[in-house]
Length: 297
Image 1 (cartoon, rainbow, N blue to C red):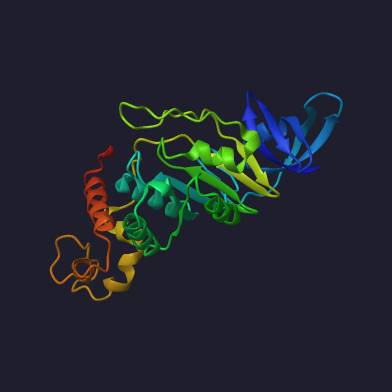
Image 2 (image 1 turned 120 degrees about the vertical axis):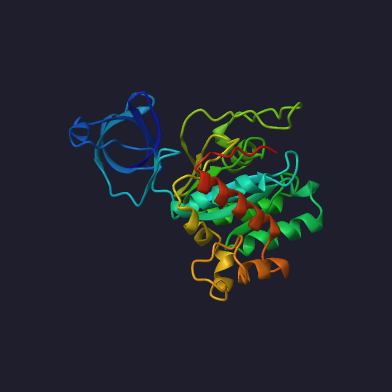
């Protein structure tokens, strides 16, 4: 029987077959071959017990993976949903760019989901949409007080395995509880002192949100260090620069201190976001010095 591993705890794997969940062990052959099943793996299992609750089986074969991530440690992810609040707490745009760069490195499509839409002005929504659609992202604005916005999220998740990530306090657990009512996730109480949510995620788990639709929750982050990119290649992670780069005076222009830089000219003309460009410069300097810069906001 085929299924998908949705949880791994203490050497046991919970395998979802569509109709049932089986508690399985992996056969010793995987260890001998240097393979380890991951949450998200598609597998074949042999059923050994249909009386116990949960029913039991053995993982007999790992099916081919499309990808495997390290953090979170999960396989066969189709896309990433990056969840940031518009306010309370205010978003760290530097951190947001780091998430986008990380998703590009992993070759995952990124969807930006801004929560607390009901607290935002139309001007704030317009600026965020214009800034991040220009770099190729799908941008959603949702609120638990505006039910129809949840339908947009459900549609974009349908039939895919999506990793959900973002800073603590942005409403990730609340969104998951709305999408997967059976998840019963603890919603972190927002810290009144620092306006940050307490991290409530403890392990990687796939949550079924519909037929062939799975969500992967990840811990909230307070910092993200982009370290495996050469500084002079960082501009490739800012796709809105591409249309201007051929007009720069120098080949290999870094777009910071060079004269006759078309990217900087586009910035001055309002055709490139100042938020994105500022983050680009900060991350470039970090990469040049190879020192982590922790963003707090």
